[in-house]
Image 1 (cartoon, rainbow, N blue to C red):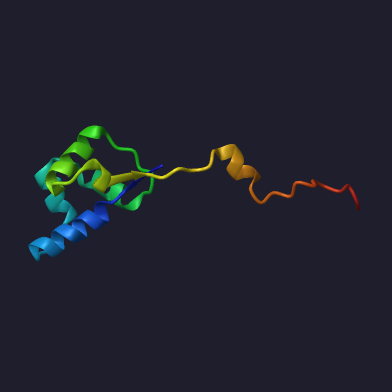
Image 2 (spheres, helix red, strand yellow):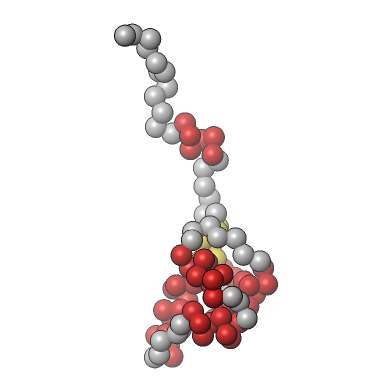
Length: 93
């Protein structure tokens, strides 16, 4: 899964510029739809196009590593077996 650090970048920019930065402002400056920005911020693992990542890196003057991190997840098969009872049903009634 990809984890975006958009909230952190907004907070850092707000602190550096001593002003509030809105999603609307970022949308206007980058050309990225507000709904897309909202999904990047609020929905872990949201998929977006590389053009949006490029625009965000340019806007925040950052490297891609500062914008996104790859989080290694367990494969779905492993997740389903974690915590399951390996002994199975006993058949006792």
